[in-house]
Length: 453
Image (cartoon, rainbow, N blue to C red; front, side, top):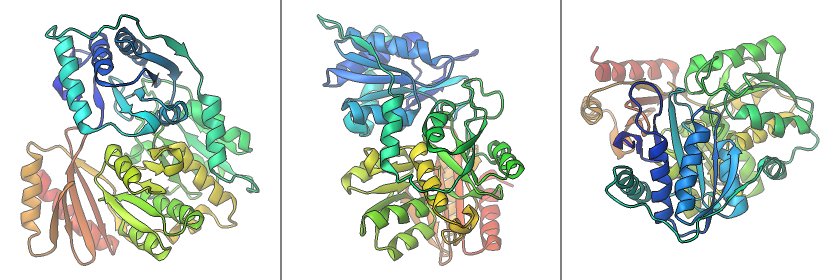
């Protein structure tokens, strides 16, 4: 079974359990067979996260791939950024079974080409058509005369060693760090990466459990940050790192228990990277704070703007040979990491800067926060395009409307962005303004239009 709804703009994601599953083991096998028929490679690396369905879905996919003559390095349990690392380190395409921050009933697949480069949108379109035809019995799966082989490999030691090479971690003051893995893959990777550095780790929900018994693994939702905020205050920690389910995103909380806006983290890391490579290029997306653009320019760098989504950011990272990229969703991309996103490496950069400063983190990042932001607010709507058009019409004459990644309306001291989600049936709102009062007024006005109240 492979329902059309599981094929998203950047990956595959859908329900695999319960009364109305959208894909299953047979569908995963068909995906593997279709994948083998589309790529011109002899081997790939495959891994999965901690979701209960991961081992059987990835095994079925591998069966389909090897029947088509492609050999597989099976990495087993891994975070998504471990998979990106494996693709770059082993110089082969990668496939990660994960549904990131989605609920336990979901699973999905993320793909990359060699060196962790993104697949093209057309690849996912072709994969969907071929896999669904195979799954429905309308096409024969490709079968090679000699089946591919499967080799197990633990990539964790190489992953840890590589990350430690990318950040100067010498001479840091002692740090106490809360790590909230949300029962996701950071429960495996964070201790392996941080403990050798002498960091005191206060772990929250480090045990791998794809049913997510404590909170959903989505740090974009404020409710999922509360436990880490309380732990920072209770233990007097220097900061907290909160990861999503597959650990490719990382939110940062300062010593007061306050969330550091991802745009401020982007600016902080960008400044550090520009010190190493002056005049470098930084990639941001359409809803990154204007503060990042200003700060990068002040430090001699150049900003390139991307649509929201890892596929788009990675493509621009490669095109412009950018040294770093950041998104509001706490995805952080590094040229030294094959242009791919890695929450763990972003966390190491923050730890390195915090460990060299005699200031608390809140004071360090204050210089990178210049505007009031709403954060991302989701609304369920019947017709996203009609809702966006309604808002654009209501703001006519007050700001310029830019269409492309949803609609972004830019005024003299503010901007408003509405865009459809790539992975869920939601319309996402982000607002930034020069003051909290102006931001709140704009936010409430747009929500009233979108939600009809």
